[in-house]
Length: 233
Image (tube, rainbow, N blue to C red):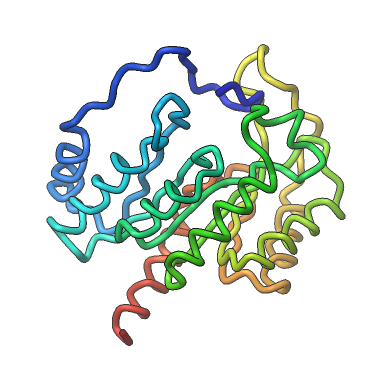
């Protein structure tokens, strides 16, 4: 895909999946002694299942090797195919993350045409429907030209489908070929959105210029939530 904010290279003919990757990834994570890991992937629209089985197998192998490791998966949208969302949601992961990236009114200017606001909301909504105990999480970039009322509406839309956590960070232009920054949002404004999101009902909000979707403070917070849930289960 070719989202205008993203510097990850794209390919019309990606290489085939590495059958050993799930095992090698799981083994490395266990050997490193990690307590919390975030797995992510590019969109693999070239694969019939979007890579969902490969992704899910990686999670399952991690959990088989050490069930105490907490796993967050930052996923693509699987082209809106809910059967692929379900495969990953039922893999044993703890946190299902998928980013809406920006407010609804800027989607067509920011994201690849194959992505979409409603499609992303559907992914998050159905992941939680498939496994209600999942923590769901999304992220929004600021500085793209969004208005306050649009950010607030995005919060409402995410909360309406049960999203638990949201992160907000400043968009930074990776190269001259990518879309330009519309504005540099002040730290005070990021703090405002943190308080606004918390008051509206999110379990956790990470908001700051350098915050990204896989933010370490969020992982610490989520780790505590998940451990408490396991202790009372």
